[in-house]
Length: 201
View 1 (tube, rainbow, N blue to C red):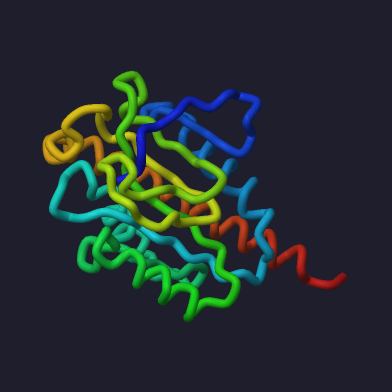
View 2 (view 1 turned 60 degrees about the vertical axis):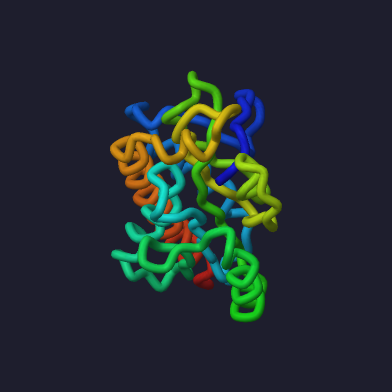
């Protein structure tokens, strides 16, 4: 669970915040992800860490994204966190240790749900830097990701655990589908372009 959201100015090119109902959301997320991915070395291992639990409708965004990505069975990235094998507070540090020991110089993308202002519920964010899972419910957990994506699933600021348990699953499902498809498309396009650029003339 990520901390409360914050607004980003249009001049902050490292971050994006967009309603999931925006008709151009897929294109916007893909382009912003490409902006970040081009800063990564083309040979880096892309690792996606989807954080959350299937025991809470509000906090299952990450595992839903992970399960959707797993269906593509893509060799272009390594995936941690699905509905069957979630990454949560109890195993997050062990998962991060495994990633560091398994993948050389990984480029990590974190995925998590977060709470925010009522006007921001339903927004998806792409942000430079690591996310801080657990901060929204006062848990001390290690930061995750070179960049991260979050979905604002409900209103924060009071009774966070109760709010998470009473979040609309339909909203979380729609947001997870958008994040998964946009992320997969961005990585695939980035890999294709990087491969073409690497081919000597």
